[in-house]
Length: 266
Length: 271
Image (cartoon, rainbow over all chains, first blue to last red; front, top):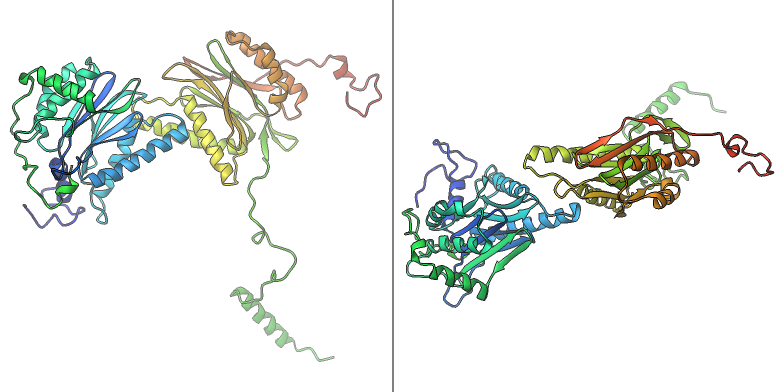
């Protein structure tokens, strides 16, 4: 891997004005398997590709529920994501106790981004190696937000992160105008079609390797699983290959090459 | 009797004083029956000092209304006669407080910090009165669990900026919280609630609601010795919150029983 003398400590600037350790952490996000989110006027949907470390092993979970109105999908170090998910659940629960209502997603995203940012300014801590998509429905409607190890956070209509996510981004950019008025079912289909571009080689989307979750007005955060998910997978197959764009050319590290920390990256 | 040796006495006195200064002198309280303030068990607020009396509130056709007088008593002394015990919190909530006035000021500071933070976030989120109510419940209950309560009985009134629904709730100094269409704190719970129960309707016009609250405040002024005839009425509607300037309510003392409390009765002084 490319190295230089300014990358041993997060708090040291390179002469080019970069923080290399922070950028390496963001690289960990790109190594994680893809996940994406998209929103309509009423709902937010998360879709993710799961990896299995082994033929006989289970798939690493990519989507976590935070509260009835909020969930996350992650790309990067799963262990770091679990820490952050625990923090988010505590905050959501505490807000429910104190105020009796559900925590605003953007406020939690701000706090989360602050946690990430603190690590970029202290030599005693390592930046979190995880990128996160937060899907929520709160008092101000449906939301999709992305957080990254750099401490940046953004709100999106639709977004994809992780390995080969450029393909999904291209799909989402092409179709985003249909999203606001789309039904939940259409949103899920769009999500799965976008996700199908992120898959490696000859593999196909299947119930075991795909996670889908929805949240919206009158719809608590819920993962779509089993037969219900299979129905969506069948539907996009029927709707044809025309919708699946050719993988766009983003030079990314081949995700299935075994790396030392491969087990922890999802 | 030995002859006095002044220089020796003087130097001994100076020496003892030196010991005292550097803290080597034997503790005076050691084994002594009286305790200093520092040795005594630590005590928290066990009763309020400067207090406001009743706050009353009701829902009506267009919103929610609160009423309170402007007196802060020091024990039985009518000490401060122009304090405002009903305050707006943000854009759609009102808070009325009876009990310790300084604790109410501290609570208002907490809420103003929170309102400022909401403003700073600038994310279009509007805090609902039910959230202020729940927050205060958590604060009051937390403080009572620390055995250091904020000594207030609070009424929270407002309109939910998201749904337009009316809210009226109370929280006491140990964190008991509930909602109702009519509420009254302190003496008001004894003297005003029966009147409110008899005359309140959900479809009351603003004028009717105001008149009902004024009648309640008048009765409270007649019978509650910590009440004043100078009051404020505040309303929360879908248009926002408004706290009136203080004004004096009309009272009538021409009843025979008022004029001659002991007439015709050999009582102990009460009528």
